Length: 398
Image 1 (tube, rainbow, N blue to C red):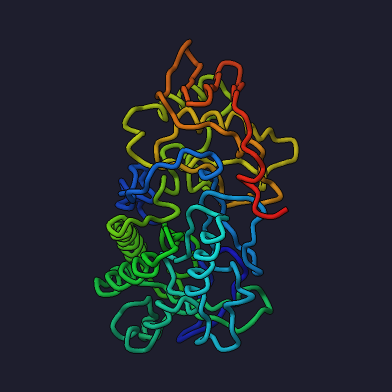
Image 2: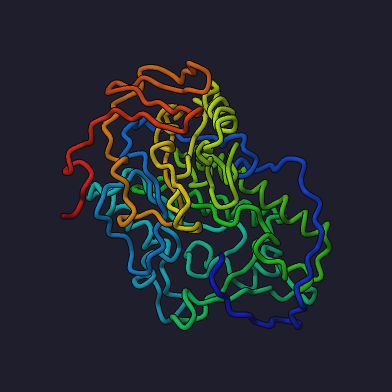
């Protein structure tokens, strides 16, 4: 949760945040973080490039796309103009996101749709979580508390000055009953018709985005590490639970860092321009065993870069087509939308009739039914000899 929050003193004075040194885990137990790949749903392969695009929507007014997209994840802020109510007890964000997914899929605007949950926080505006945000569950140890037993709350508004103050409580995943409830509640909310996945936000766990929580609650580095470990174990349980009902999470497709990911990626970064690094990345992505896991390749919109940064979209699309497994998406959580829709997304590639081939050294290619996609790492050039789909197949509004 990165937007401005409202500070509140509850139970005791909030101490000045002091960074605590938390020993790193040798390997995260969460497939969302460790790059080993999560258990995946059994979805029929969809090789269409249009249907392999992916983006996040966080518009307060909702999501009304002018193009067809493959996979959209609706952030909790999406449609807040509709789900936010004057009384926090009446907020129905989960129901709104579910209904939006159904509407988008019924209209043919998206192929797959994801809703929102958070791995650190129970959020008052999510109905399944508000149901247990009460004194009884605080006393039962489901949420992080001050030493005097009162719950540690991190309240906020949707946007500063917008609507009521909403509670955010930190889940204590060390509590087995709390862990079981939140895994089940998220799974049940995601397993409804019209929804394919959830975004499991803040998957590293406290105190990653909330360094103040340790000193505020008097937690030791060892206690914080135990909470973080329990959070990530809960995520692994969630990934398995979702796959068991043929669902997944936005960051289960490839993992937040991925084998070659980045801190803003939640996916695998495309091979870089450097010839040696490019070839190494492609060799990794071309390993046969990679065809049995998910791929979420980042599409660079330049949202946090200078205007002169080469975006290398053709090279990215070529790398994606050469290496993609059956379950794969190309996109980003940042800056992608109708205004940045790339005509490359409309290439009519058909289906793969071969696998990645390196020949000559540093040149990687793959035969598709409508042509051969290739990336030459030696010259940082791409070959995409495909026709574009008719506009009627990728436009939703004219």
